[in-house]
Structures are given as structure tokens and as C-alpha cells.
Image (cartoon, rainbow, N blue to C red):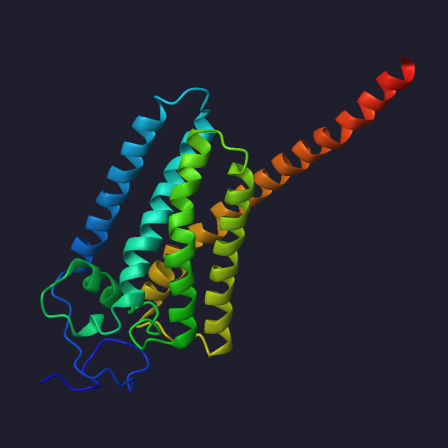
Length: 227
């Protein structure tokens, strides 16, 4: 029987009763995730090309929302609702993902309350909202920019909470520098950069729309006075 300390995570005295070692190698776990992501992005890219009046940038945004939305709902959702994933003996891919990722941040395998809370909100609220954003862009809904802005702010908030809480708790949760930079930093970096860029774009679009709306009544009043 596996001992509570017989695991690859930091700190070494972390108690994980019933831990079952990884069945899949890192290359397989990362490779499957990369392949699935490419497939999702490719499908969205192809179908978005058939939509009318959709720009290239909007097509890329749809790809991003599909990728991040499914990541939130499937991967993060599994983590939230599978508290004993580290005991899995069936080589379930989703369990293997979190066993592997925990080498970069052991708070996941330790089920830290702040991590569970952030991931729970992300999976349940932001995940479906990301898919709604795809629909909003494709059908050119009036709420498209507001929705994307709200989701991006939520992602930024969650990511900052993720990094700040780790810093406040000593930032010593990675099994090695490689896992620290590859998983903890690298795997989360895009959720800082891309939401920031989307937020800036949406902010400009919303401000522009509000400016036009405010200018119209003024122009109408001037025409009325002239008459």
C-alpha cells in the first residue's frame, strides 16, 4: 500500500493518503492535450470561416473562447468535482493531467481551499460564458463586447489570485524548477496576456459605442433647432 509520503510532490511531508502513481508519461499527457486543443481550434476556425461578416481577428477570438471554455469546463471541472483524483487507478486521462500538473503546483493534489474555490467558479461560470461568447461573436450580438470584457476580467482576477496566494504561502509548491516554469508559470501565462489584450479591445469598442450613442441625441437636437 502506498504511504502518505510516497509521492513526487513538494513539500515532501505533504500527506496524500491513497496516492496512486502516474500511469501515463508526461509526453503522452501533454501530447494529448496539445492535439485536442489543435483539433478544437481547427474546427472552430473552419466553421467560423463560413459565417458572414466575421473578421480574421474575430475568428481567432472564437478559437480562443472555444479553447479556454472547454479547458475550464472539462479539465478544471473534473478537478473541482473529483476531490480524490490522485487515488485513480484506471489511468483516467483527466486524473492523470492533475497528477502531472500538481508537480508544478502541489496545492491541487492537496486540495487547497483557495484553489478549489477559484477553479470552481471558473469551471461553472466562466466556462459556459466562453462558449456563449463564441455564439455572440458569430451572430454579432449587441452584448458580445460586454460579455468578453466580463469573462476576461474574471480570468484575470482568478489568475492574479492564483499567483498571489501562492506567493503569500511561500511559493514552494513545485517539484523542481522545470515544473515551476513549465507548469506553474508557462501553463498559466496565456491567461494573463490574452485576457488583458481582449479587455483593452473590448473597452475601446464599448467606449466608442457609448460615445456615438451620446453624440446622436445632440446632433438630433441641433437639427431640430435649425428647423
